[in-house]
Length: 411
Image (cartoon, rainbow, N blue to C red; front, side):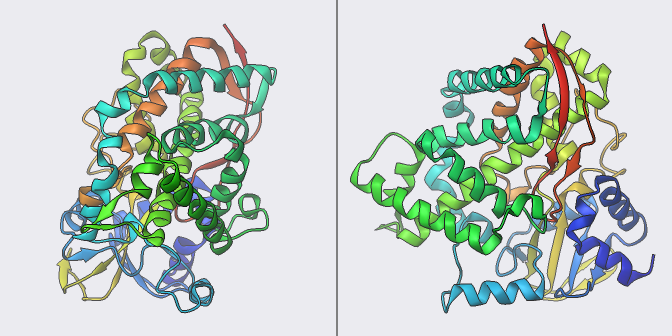
């Protein structure tokens, strides 16, 4: 494959709708050019970092490789649309993924306690209830369904809405926004909206949430954010709704993708499913393996703040760097049998939650959700298998399956 053809494939949303192609492309990079200068048609050029050790090296140096200003892969045409939509504003919103220290540490601290294991344990009963409701819904549909669109997308959203204290009546509205937000170039997911439309819809929704919580505070994360102080001053509306957007979007779709992709992995690895039924205490390890296996966050960008040498390549200050988490999680030098799904894999120092100061703030919650869901499902299912061909979302940024037709019987 010529470099330009390779580069175009690496930037093409459709490549990520073909999961085997995605892994072949990055295996080629890891083997032949692990620090790859990429110049796809219609995009500003950037480096791709595909090896686990190199990703760790970069993520450990947040002062040398910063989040701003480029955070994800957008075409030049779409970047122009974003600037037009901002209408003179510096950005549509600014949340943790767009921040560097010291701001990143200040804003992360606002909700840090809510996403630690001690507090998440207080949610265990509610998560178990929501998991039970989801499996009840599965059986209420008969003996087959599209597991992703009818089960997996709802459960994490309901957990997140519980934490934020959002009304159940808003579920359909938030679901529609989230799917458009992370739909990438996939028309099945966007349904008439795109990233800009979805961002604006998120902003409008959460402006009202912030206003309501300041007037009627409650014991929930939405209130914590709306009534917080930054550097001794009350948080501004822009900062509050930016925080909400980050939590509501990333906290939902990543877990939905992992649960659906995790189930597919179990269907394709019957021995692993049987073992988890016999030994449910292995579910926490299996949840970590599902995150590694699915790697729902495909990439983030960093910008070099200084000149830096890595594997004999000179990265210049100001260069953009795409960090590929799925590639790092399939690195043959970092994982034994990386293309095998091993439910009790240990150690499993995967990159599915990111690494370093930018590691996902909700990683403990996500793991608890996955464990609660599969504990319920595996205890009640007798047989589950594919009832059609799975399909993946065509997005280079964040996502997983968009269709997972299954048939099943209960115990």
